[in-house]
Length: 179
Image (cartoon, rainbow, N blue to C red; front, side, top):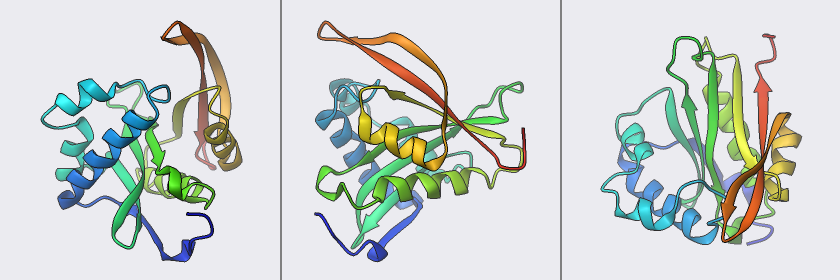
């Protein structure tokens, strides 16, 4: 759906009653793009609840999903998870970034990521946000770089699916007023 009215798209944390919408879209992402995520569709669909369903239902302020909603339909997701370990709780991760293919080309991924970063940095102690992305997924890499994520490393041959190796980029976004 090129050239939709992007002003009509709402970006916000998903509410506790929207966990089923999330589940549907998350499973769709795994099915359509099996080489983009570490989880497997067949394994995840068998679970009674996905881990982020619990976070959504319990309105966890440190582990959440931001959704892109168009006419009340969930069309994109971006997750955030704050590390719990005492030595790592200054860090968090972007996970499960996905926009339905028919909505590509409308800055939805960019806006989802921006909203997720804004929500995450409401956690006062958070200093940096990290993500992992397959180096061959050019559109995602381009969005992350445009937002301001910096490459902090590459894990060569990180995944091997169907005999093909994939490298993974590690990227970090730092809070502006922290080192």
